[in-house]
Length: 179
Length: 138
Image (cartoon, rainbow over all chains, first blue to last red; front, top):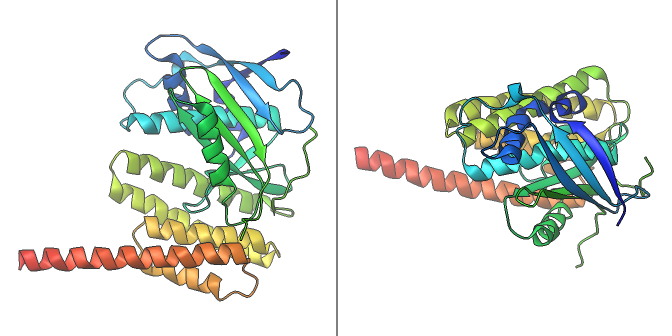
């Protein structure tokens, strides 16, 4: 399979997405560096249904400043760290590979986490992270959830496995539920 | 970037002031989620209430610009934020306003109707617990 290498500075998500995306940076760093002092990580990102974006598997080199490393524990449960770490990575890949902006935090009940836009229309974005576990199963579950949204909008799913350094970004079309 | 054709909610004509409100309420919701995860419920409720007021403003601005789908999106988010701030009465009132709107899409009508039932059930449960506490104290 053909691979293309991309580079991105994690802190740049704050300039790209006007929701205060800097919020996610320490969480993403924590999950990517583990107990080490590294300031970069490499992930594979699988792209699904994104039109003519090619190739479909990318190598993403992500870097950050040591000044962005949280100096003390973030005081939230481990699963919350993983979820917000995935949100930080979602901000990177949705800009880099779909050319979209994370515009708004979605409501509890929307069935996805964020609204993303291309300047004219807004779509859903559902994000989920895991340290281990099956990414395929999680991706299927999150697509089902996104497609249950009450607005009938199409949307994107980003799932991340931090142990495998692997992520999937997919575009998903809304389908009317069968009666 | 060439995407397949997509179906979304229109934000055409959204101006800078409205976009700034979208940004502010999103930051407040993230802060509220963090505070809640840190078990700081009171501080989280304050942030959700502030976000809810902005969502109501966004709803009104979108209706005024003819962006009704986006207006309903902000209306539902306002109700959700008020509920998370603990103000079920206000949340249910906003839901009823939307349910009375003739342009409310059917899918969203079902979701809001279900949400109102959930909020009423939670409020009833909370009331039972509150009365139980009062009786235990009295």
